[in-house]
Length: 151
Image 1 (tube, rainbow, N blue to C red):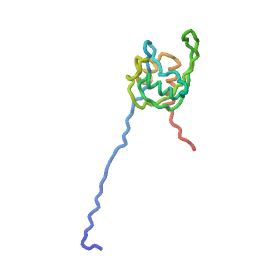
Image 2 (cartoon, rainbow, N blue to C red; image 1 turned 90 degrees about the vertical axis):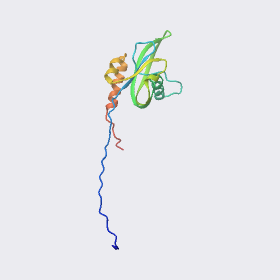
Image 3 (cartoon, rainbow, N blue to C red; image 1 turned 180 degrees about the vertical axis):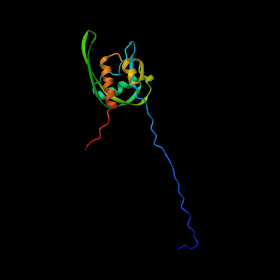
Image 4 (cartoon, helix red, strand yellow; image 1 turned 135 degrees about the vertical axis):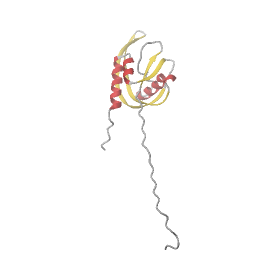
C-alpha cells in the first residue's frame, strides 16, 4: 500500500472576495420644447395602431434622446387647450420608465433642451402643476418596495 510513496502534507489555501455595489443617484428626465420657456415631461400623440406604452417609449427617445423601458403605468392628466380655433380636451398617460441607453443631448429639433436632474430640481423646474404631481407619483412608485408574488 505504501510502496515507497510518501504522502504530501495537506496544504491549505484561503481566498477573499467582495460583493460590490455602487450607489447611483436617481435622476429624472425633463425637456424644454423649442420656442418655449416651459419645462415638461416628454410626451406626444399616439399614432394610429400604436399602444400608449409604445408611444411613451418613442416620445422619450425622440424628445429626450434616450432609450427607456416601461416599468409601470403612473397615471394620467387631462387639460384643455386651443388649437386652430378648436377647444381640445387632452388626456396624457404617463409611465414610470427605466433608462437603458442614450444621451439627452441627442433629442430631436422639437426640443431645445433635454436634461436629467435630481428629484427636487426637476420638480422645481417643471412648469405645469399636473406634471409636478405625476413626477411625485413616479418617485413614490420608484421608492415603493417590490412585493414578492405569493403564488
